[in-house]
Amino acid sequence: MKAAIVENAGAVVVRELPAPVPGEYEAQCQMLFGTICAGTDNHLALGHPPFCYWIKPPFILGHESVGRVVTVGAKVRHLRVGDVITRVGCPPVGGVNCGWGGFAETGIATDWRALQEDGLTGWEDKTVQQILPADIEPAIGTLFITWRETLSYVRRMGVRTGAAVLILGSGGNGLAFAAHARNLGATRIAVVGSGARAAAATLAGATETHDYRRDDAWAGLANGFDYVIDSVGKARNVQCGQQCLKAGGTLGIYGLDEAGQLTLAPGKTFTFYNSGYDEAEAHDAVLSYYRQGKLNPAIWLDRRQVFALADINAALNAVRTRTLIKPLVRLN
Image (cartoon, rainbow, N blue to C red; front, side, top):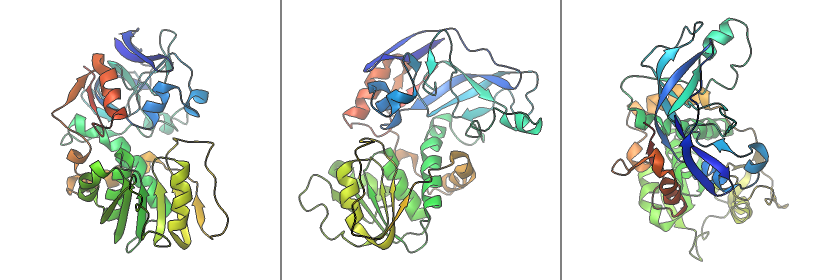
């Protein structure tokens, strides 16, 4: 099989590796589509901290991919040939590590339910691998990863009906937060992000948008919000975001762009949300929102531009130059 491999910081190559062989509780999958995360995938590819401390090159990139089951192990009971599975990736093979391994031609899905039923371990981090119903296109299924992560985050954070929510950043995650805030009943949803994405933010659910490049971007935002979510993780965002919270509000830092450089300023009483998310717990809700038309994939994906696996660097460049929000990569 071929896979997109980060050989070292900034160097991503597509080359052949041995295809992974499934174990008795695993299924081999033909990988179908993946999307690029401007956060995790981009930082991993460039060797940015803290990602460079966690995964050492060479490694297979990609955590937003789906694959179709082609063979199953002897003890697989809940996966069938033809099932399309979210969050499939390739484990370490041929001396190459796994950076979630989604940008490969072949991947492995785990029958985590069977492992759980048999009283075994090793299933706990596999619950993100969920079967997509037949009415969900595999290409759209790549967005379920982003949608699930962010929905779990805002629900755990406590976003509720009637809330005022400020979202910092207008990338794929920021737009997802705007959509979820709307779907959870927030009445004021402000996005501070790129002026070029104001229309996308409004379509996603924002009631107001502010261009972060403008001197007056923060005018009228101070002390106005129950929740502030920094989807990027910039020090300036965190500083300004704290001033936008109502007394007793909640601040969440979701992005990691400037990890290790962020500080919380004294002088205001608020809650710092730091409990993360559980992607799997939001799967059914995301599926329901999508079927109701409350999550529009066209906001994130431009289906007219689909990259081949061999063109992974062009897809990464589309993220870095902000010409696409979520570049779609065909894996087979």
